[in-house]
Length: 305
Image (cartoon, rainbow, N blue to C red; front, side, top):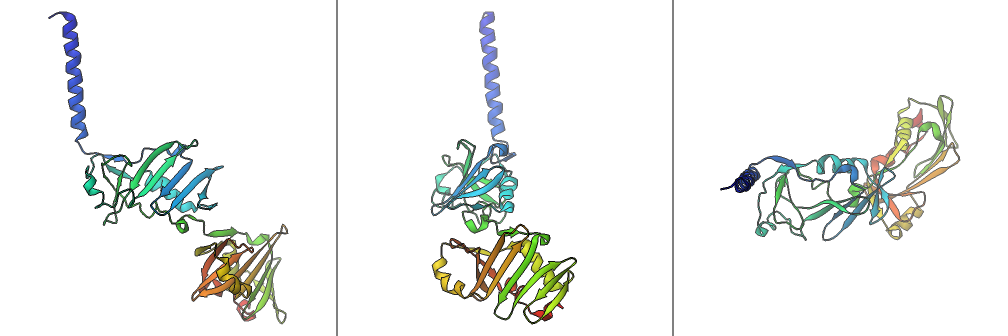
């Protein structure tokens, strides 16, 4: 056996040993990140199931809903995508490699939820079908073109949902109290105005004129609510159903601002204890609030003393 043959044999032996070691390592269980997408490259997130599709896009460093409508994204929900979903761990060993298990884990194309992460050119960085399990602490998942099913070490179903109510920002607006020049409130029991003056607010209803301390609880609740006006839910493209009720609302709120702009809220009873809220006369998107929200504005002079 000449020298060259010995070298070839040695190389072959090394390759065989390397192959054996790789195979052995493949069968050794270890924890890994399930999703491999680079978070810095993600510009679009698409979540879909057999009924709905939700598409989120990063625009000028801000995440927006772009389909099925355009709206701001709830910051808490998008943070969950990057902190919980992208970082979710699993074993490198699948819990099943059989298509017969797809129904068991609700992970067929029609039963599961498809999550896609795309870059700025709409190239898919990573994708997976998320199934359902009876455990509140784990989630089954598989790649769309693979039969291997993995058990994720956290339940992420509540994050990867196509329910737009979960993704929409529930804060309609934020106003610092020093930017408010007048609050006008008309309710079933009273009509009054609040205006700032130095270190107090003035209350007037046509009968009473009061100076209201900033420590007054009723005033603080009103200013706090307007500082970050938050709704409970959403009513889309259904204005005609509520048109008559909103024509004769239970509560109207007008807010005038230092820069000359203003906001107008019209609130009508829907089904006790829920009310429908119209913001700035928008007929496409309505909102829902509850009785305790309405009660904060339905006040009389005695509440400001």
